[in-house]
Image (cartoon, rainbow, N blue to C red; front, top):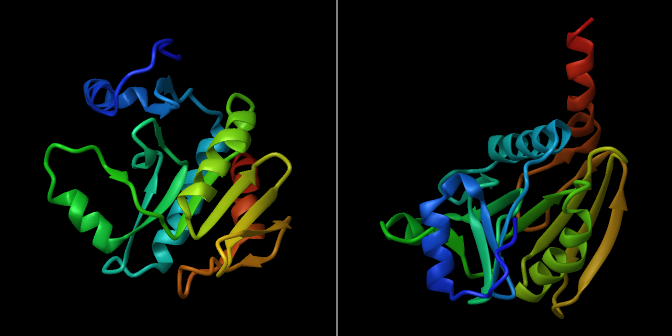
Length: 196
């Protein structure tokens, strides 16, 4: 659902706080409710978050899946499918009992999982916003094509794009983390095998 008239950041935060299950985002001042997703979308996002979380030191990072928000401006706030937050930022948010969990500064990794309902919006709006924010690494995973588009920020502030369909991928800003895409995508197949 989209609310037609633009609202302020404060009004957006009040809306999101009143309706936490609604998963409200703010795009150019207009609230948009993140729609429900398919099983494959949700399962892949949760599995990825689990794989990352299992390899990270909780004293350095926190992992969120469809919970925390990133803010680019007072008119743009999004809920990534998966995101890694530095522990220092998490401490600041933890100590503010009134605020939504929202990262205004760049994060080490932000991930969108493709869906039919939001695929174009993710590509045309959210991925571009993450680049402008300066997030260190941006992933867009397609659960049906079993593909990862990856953008890694370079020293000059630009992004280098690569595409992966299998094998191991190591996020540059997350020391010691390696994601085996064959295992990640295979998690969808494991479910079919459990029915046999």
